[in-house]
Length: 408
Image (cartoon, rainbow, N blue to C red; front, top):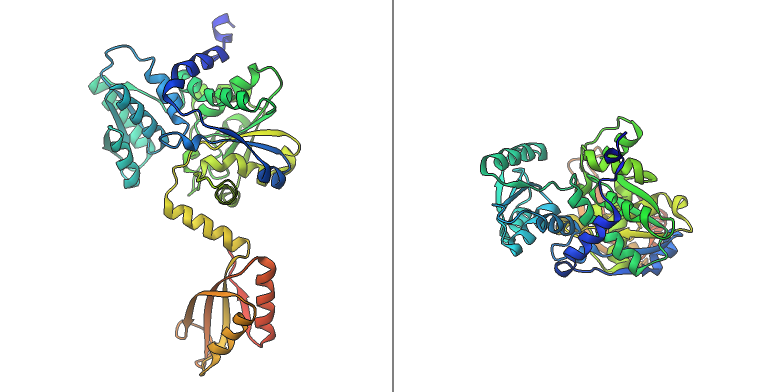
């Protein structure tokens, strides 16, 4: 094998140079110790708040590093993206006076289209999937002489994303493990390059959603399906990059998979404990600590909250589901007799137990009960699971058939 073939695609010097290049135009986001998350997980947890970037995601780093290395007179850049790469590239291209075109699939939420246009980019809606948009972007690239900026499979992108790790280690030098989300692999490739070149051993663990284990498949030779509605759409990549897959194979210790339930729990914990809004992909590192605590116990872990662009309605749904799972929000299905005072008597039990009723739904017709029977569903708010259990016991002690409607 030649010396050229043995040389790494990205070095620590490349990442240091990228950091010097982009530092004046990005936010040096804080790296802060979380006492409460450390107590919950058994690890010493440091959080890097990349959701504080102007476009609320780390993707600005790689995009800007690439833009700053383009030849003078470049007529414009183009990318295929429906997420954070689109906004990061559009924002910095506009700031630098470089025309930017972003090709997005037609189903892209209008808020993302509007935000990208708001950063000065021309947006082209094409196709139903990312693959359709990507193929069309390459056609426009050739037709208009534009420069394509890949979201992850580019050494300049990887070097830019790796600057995240340099800042973390400068601010929290005792970190001995990075637990990092993997989509296409740009972020973890850059961070792993820094970890392998630092002054003390730093383990690197990647995290993917169970529904999209694309890099896991590539590294481990498995054939698990990559499909489904994951909360972590920012890392829902069906095919990782060629460059990044090689770097992950060489530099990353392990990849773990996390469930949708753990992703939801992590997003909710970050809102409740850290008072910060993080998208599903940005919470993947914490989800790994929640789901695999033994793997990380006793380690000093650095987590990148890599993005905060989550739809507000989706965030509300995640928070409410977490309240339901913790017993603070519940829906009870109670069987009653259809006669005057039946509901009043039931509600007296709720009052005695000091439970707040939020919504009531009566069902007389669409039920298998006899004509004189009815089902009522009561949504209520309790203090915790123990309080909810006492309520259910009291309702059943009052002679009612009552069941809790559980979440999956």
